Length: 269
Image (tube, rainbow, N blue to C red; front, side):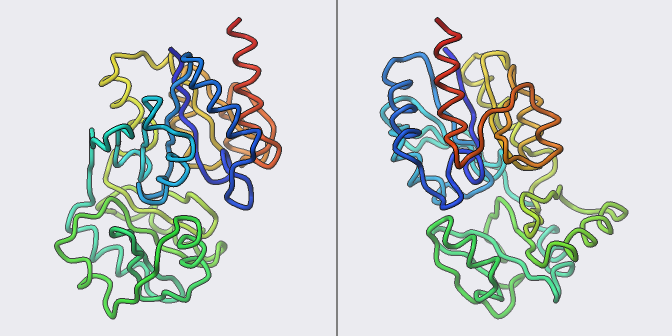
């Protein structure tokens, strides 16, 4: 059995956040033939991954969803949560403090995005991608107090966010952080990334990392690309991701994942 862990935005879906007919047909056929198991491994919340997971019929073909960059692992057939980890309480006031203007902070709770700035173009971008509704709160730290959160995202203009990220490298931070997009600085529990999520899943499945292929495009995909037996980057990936990959396939807008799976099937035979 081959397990393929695929990032969503910029990798599996097109620039319009859709699946092409070719990609959908290719992935359904590979699952029907029984030699491939699909894992969607994304920074998105589970609710933001669900429409694509359902379209790919992961419930029918024993697929998995790894959400929040490894923070939550869900078997799609019965929505069984294998693993979930949340931010420590002390992380919330810290994140609120560093997200003062010109930045802002958001998080996912159910089908909503909680934020003090619901009209931010970066918040709205996430809302559209995840099909979630932004809800304005007066004080972020007070609004999320007592709610277990898998991650918070500080958003802002990319060049300023890069400066903030560099400054935080020299401070003691109560959680891990990384940029998943130029305008998203994500804060997650210590020790979590897409690779640790896949390792937990591999242990549960009694599988070896060499049974896994990982495909991505962004900085937060590098750990799983390096962890997997074969790491694949789509051609539109960041330079660092291209350098980390063993194989480079076509871009997300040119059915890169599906074309790789087609070649994989040929190699398998």
